[in-house]
Length: 315
Image (cartoon, rainbow, N blue to C red):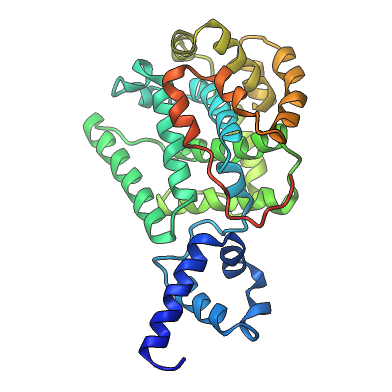
């Protein structure tokens, strides 16, 4: 490399490339790396420095569909909407009521869950693991305070929600995912669960499918918590936004969830979706977040839009 000064100079160039060039990052962390190492000494050196350094290697690959899904405010809002419905039906929802924070601010609490997930998706592995460990510690403290343990199936249910609604939201708003992309979504959240030491997680997307169906059949029911949570959603969103939330939920929830919720159709939002998809090309897609959430949450939503590090390909 030509001595310490040359190495330092190359490292500075690596840092510049890494921070400013999404194609460079994607090449670095994808299977394309081998094609460049022989012909590009600087790239080879950067690859060894960044990828082999465990503190910098990303928890989610830069070319993963998961970064695209969780880097867009619209998909996150639909994930949020679907999870809001399923949380209300989960048999372990009483744990969310224990501190009293969920009924007091259900929108804020669900945003908090989504924010944790996003931090994991966009962090280096070491930092992502620290976030997951912190989440585990928070839950252990809650369990100690209540004198009970959160059942493993309840932890699995939350992971399964993130898998299903990540896939469903993208497919409603963009296009159907390939089998490989679906498997990629599952693998990311399986690794989150493994780090949290959740037992009996399926190993593959194929194994997960019947387990998720079983969860839908046995872990969901309508309770007084269901009615109270939906009343709180309506109170915090207002009647019009609550109606839109229900319609968004109708588009992404599984049939089992839909059958347990109050009957409702999605004529308005379903009719508007083609216009929304066209508006994205004109950078006018901000109106979706404007009609979905109250003013106090709009700044948070703006922060959700994050440019993915995937090589830009049209969805």
